[in-house]
Amino acid sequence: MNRLLSMQAALTAPIIMISQNPQAETDRLEACNDFSINLKAEEEVRVILDHPAAQDQALKEVQALLEAIANHRADGGNE
Image: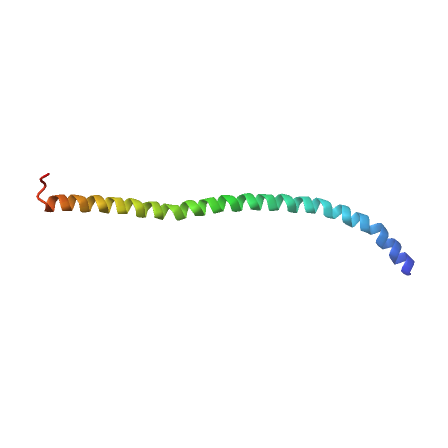
């Protein structure tokens, strides 16, 4: 009985190994695609995070211009 089971295991092992090879290739391709998607998502997140910073900078510039105009008017507008 032991020899019969050993022989059956020896015959089925190569078949199992061959069937796992295509799955490994599929997993490798899926991992590559996941990596590409993650890179794109990271880039989009960076753009989204940079956008408020750019808005803050623009608002600071507008505020500085408004203050300059207000100061100019308060001084009488004469230069």
